[in-house]
Image 1 (cartoon, rainbow, N blue to C red):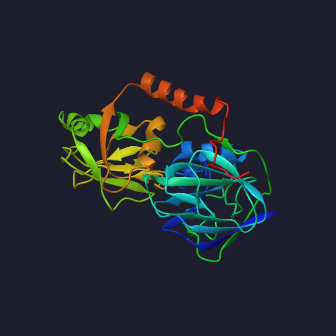
Image 2 (tube, rainbow, N blue to C red):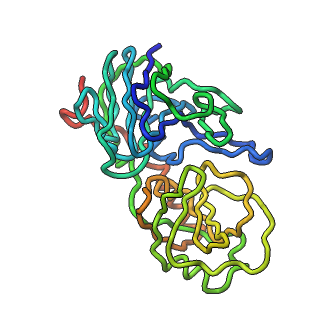
Length: 313
């Protein structure tokens, strides 16, 4: 087996996968990678299975030393990845040799990058997933972010450098939504206010939820009982400033849900940084289904040869 050693951990580097599905009725959050689209591209580029764990890298990347020869794929945000000081573009897979050093110069586009290795990244398996849940302190490496001198086993591998046939970062500020289960409890001008306002992501955002600031949304009348909430739910708290729930959210919530982001646009939400703008666009169920089909369909596309000079043979 090969391994990677953490020289510097970066801002927030965690082990993630698809999360813990099937346990929501027991109050267990799904968790997992916030940008499932970018994660799957990293896995594909590295030749991993969909269940294999990867590293989710947030904004300021780590410095990693490779121990043993392996093959890896990088996807999602452009955080200035380097291998031995040479650029490693997101959306490519490459060979890594023992003593290679992976580092990041800083964010250029997007918020989260995903780094996959042949055979997956080792981690604590809890309820069928190695995803790190920092709030519950389970999965990954003792339920925490990576620290200096941590070592993680990865699989050995080798192959030809490849490039994804499409961008692996879903950018932009448009997020499509469907009416939420409590939208009829809101005043008539609430949903139009939500879709007409250009909101900003605040610094209080995290893996649990994205807090927004902008024009207040008229709030729901009366009290609301706690109930199940999906990933992508847009809650309106007493402050009237929307909160978009992400993969780290709990399984129930008490704020009324005015709308829900469609599944195909969850990767867009995952890549928005504090200070970025976003607009909500109301769509129908048919458009939401077609958008998801289009997003999933790209994984059937064949790889392209790596751009000359971008991956070392």
